[in-house]
Length: 174
Image (cartoon, rainbow, N blue to C red; front, side, top):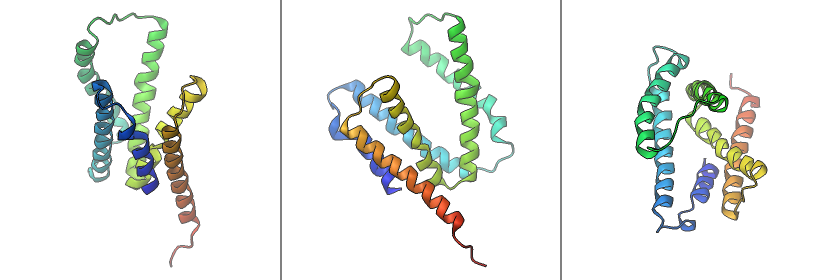
């Protein structure tokens, strides 16, 4: 847990960004807000009395998301033109049911089944994969801060995986 928190602190690095740039402050504020919402979600899922399955929630989750995001898209992108091309339809088909619906279902299922620390630290692998993929395929630079943060988060994920494996192999008390 400590490695994961240290990695997030290094990646966030409040000493390393321009405090005079409102966009930077807003973006980092959104990241912190998202992390807080993620923590609330984990606690809620762990304590909620489930009447249905996570899979039954997917259509509702997607409907609420569309209803919330449509007005926001008009506010923040009023001049954007919607063009129905094969590419845009393919992107929508991937992002809707797969990247959002399937991942929502999978993460809820994992959050219900595993301890909260395991879920939260394990989900930190997502930005690690994202940053490494960006460096590999898009040739985005990795700063020393990013590399250090990724190493700490990666170490937390490896420690978690090894700890879980060790716990399964340890003799159980009779």
